[in-house]
Amino acid sequence: MTSTSDDLHKVTNSIPGGGELRPGQEQMANAVAEAIDDQKTLLVEAGTGTGKSLAYLTPAISANKRTVVATATIALQSQLAEHDISRVATGLDRHVSARILKGRSNYLCRQALGEITRSKHEEQLQLLGGRNPSAALEPIIEWAETTTTGDKEELQPSPTHDVWSAVSVGADDCPGAARCPEGEECFAERARNEAYEADVIITNHHYYGVHLASGGELLPEHDVVIFDEAHQLVDTLGATCGTELGGRRLANLARRWRSVSTDEEAAAAIERNGNGLDALLRPSVGARCDLSSELIAHLVAARERVETTVRKLHQLNPPPGGDAEAKIDRAIQAGNHLVDDIDAIIEADDEDVLWVGGSDINPVLKRTPLNVAELLDLHLWDSKAAILTSATLADDVGLRLGTREPVMRVESPFNYEKQGLLYCATHLPDPRADNYRDALHDELDTLITAAGGRTLALFTSYWAMNLAVEALASRLPGPILVQGDAPREKLIQQLRSQHNSALFATMSFWQGVDIAGDDLILVTIDRIPFPRPDEPITQALREKAGAAAFRLVDIPRAQTLLAQAAGRLIRRSDDEGVVAVLDPRLAKNKSYRWELINALPPMSRTGDRDIVVGRLQQLQRDASGSDS
Image (cartoon, helix red, strand yellow):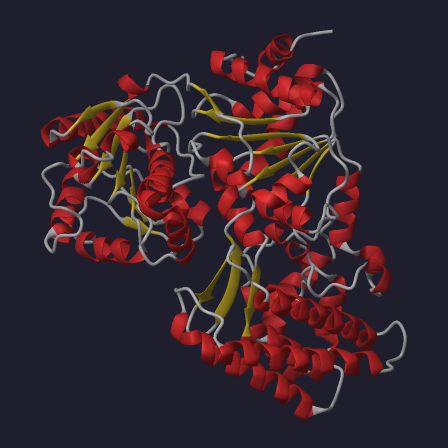
């Protein structure tokens, strides 16, 4: 019987061009193998460049254990499915079947598509958000004739939210394949059936959270679960296991009622409940929300209205097997889920945070549990091997997830001290000072100009990003690419191809962005990413932590995000560049500076802007030479 190290050698040796077995990778693989053998939990922080996907896939596949890998990003799911699993299978000389499984709403619903194409023009306009039915539906109809997966990721350009919602269904309103006229051709069911036969199932944190919350009904029995990008797991599980309710859901039920009944008064009554709920929630958007007597009374009234509607739906007697029967089944399903969610909100306790998200146009009442440990203890820990890994894991992640396992840390193979330079602009004002923004913009101008572009400029808010774009658009040596102006991958590709450009982005670009080589030589961070004082979930966590709140809540969040942002720079062994933190508190605040600095890759450090400018100018010259 071969050892895990031997198996990993086989895998790395089989990689075209010659793979390289790294000490940290081998250390991690052996720890994963032990966790699988002993059916225990392992938390492992594996620095960038460790090769952690091969380190966890190799022992899992070698052990012949059915494995679920849950990630936070689509990009990593694709990498696993298209590259990493096949590399391990080739190296171990065995057949391994792998499937990506997503939530039901990611797949085209043939029944919904058929219904909308057969609907009256007025209903089509309502479903499609006023868009021209022919222009909106024709590309999807053509694609539906050839696709084998029904996965919306295949559709380019991607359809709008309204259009896709009209041709897909979620778990809340799907009655199941057995009750659907198109059930035998259901893309979502096909994907699930294929996943049930696979050796490795690739999904996302959200789907696995729903699986846990359902008592384990969504995924087949498996021996191993691996959470990659696990630094996001606590927040995702909290959102997944919570509840969301807004007037739009009641309006949707009213629309469903109109599609099968001419009783307009019943539909109007449901809409009035929805409009009233929105009016109560609107003043609290972005903040916590108490269950006032007025809100409870409104929720109870809405619940009664929904129950009445569901009873009326059951009393309808449509022709069997037609569109009307399918519409009624979906409306009943949606109504039942609405009742359950209203109950969950009314019954919220001290371990739940009630807050209002969304927007003034579409406010959404959310119930988010603060403690997901109980759910994991009930359905995960001790029942299977669980591997949680990321390039950055906070010390308290195990405690928040309900396991006492310590975080094992595996060093990156990169020579960060030589490859990277951490610069803190100590001469800048405090970010809370009135003159900070102008000084920040001047600093960005100096650094990005020295780098000749090739920059990822990260901001803690859209407001800060937009101010910087406005201030610097005419000052920088090349174009500014702005988050929101194009899809994420297109912006990244533009940064790679337009070397004098700079990409300005917010939190979603602080992680999961992989730009290797001299396409990127400068990463800037506008300020330490402490959570806002009024963030509802963080606010509640602070209250629970009491006097130790800043140390237990704010510092770990800032450590993780800073490390993730800094990790965008060095992606391979020959990368070089500068991470510039434009917040002097990183160097000057004695109470927490070393906690934050020690969470970052161990790069050389300086506060001297002249050194940084010289380094960037040299890197730009070297990169320009290689371009030519």
